[in-house]
Figure (cartoon, rainbow, N blue to C red):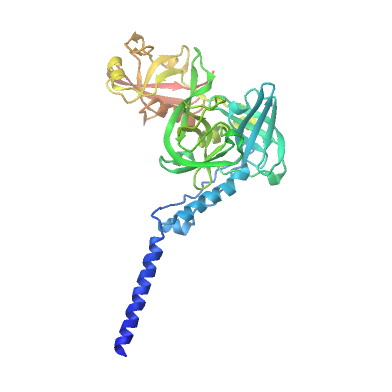
Length: 400
């Protein structure tokens, strides 16, 4: 009898152990944590930012508990169900034909964010909601520097589902992102990917003095599938917060209609730029960017460094200075001596810091100006000139 009791205890122990092992084996080693949304102060001229619930149970996130793949799927499903009602399709009706883009609602007043190039030259604008409701939209503000536009619609309150805006300063390379839009007229399409890089630059739509283009900075690169029709739609994090506005793709592939096709390199305007620009677009119809008045190489390779006779490759090299610009009045110097590189002259200043912040590339300089400064602000530039470190104070203008 005693022997049978011991055997029973042993079998019970083995059964519990095997059950525990099976339960543990069903758990995937995918750690997900949720960052609480940061509320943003609002004013009469600002869009109302809606606080989003955390995508993951805070107790699970705090404990650092690993979660299953099914739970990760549930997060994506939840993001779509919460976000898609606030994503709209834009039909541009004009004499040249129909165009299509995307956008998203940012407040209960009916303001919608999209790209400028989506509504450029518009004569009639249709806004289609996921519910099937359609209405006319009016463009009330445009920003050709960052390729943004604000549309105003009159719609029933139940149709307006504002998306919460995140903080692009907290975005990290490698984090999962979600894009929702209307690629090739497939409304409400969701794709996923990761943040591939940060701080990219693109040409602005607006021309600068001399015929070149201004530069749009602080661009997020992603491999989430973005195709024609995605323009103006949101790029979201796993909390369901908008961290960028999908703008463009880099590709050499086209379909039979010569539409560009996704190649895994897409670009989105960082949401912190949108939050900075939008209040002015709503109240004034436009936004003034700070203006320095230089042309610069974004990055310098070793051959260029040698040709330019620079002591280092880190920094923003001033290839030219626009006459009577803030940089010109402050005494900055562009290159004047020809090199073996076409249109790259030596003898220019190398900007290595702005207001004490190191400048590795021109993108660093541009992002700081766009995110932190306004026309009329004073900045301090640290430069290398003829192997000497100098400082220049200058007052920023506004882009002409």
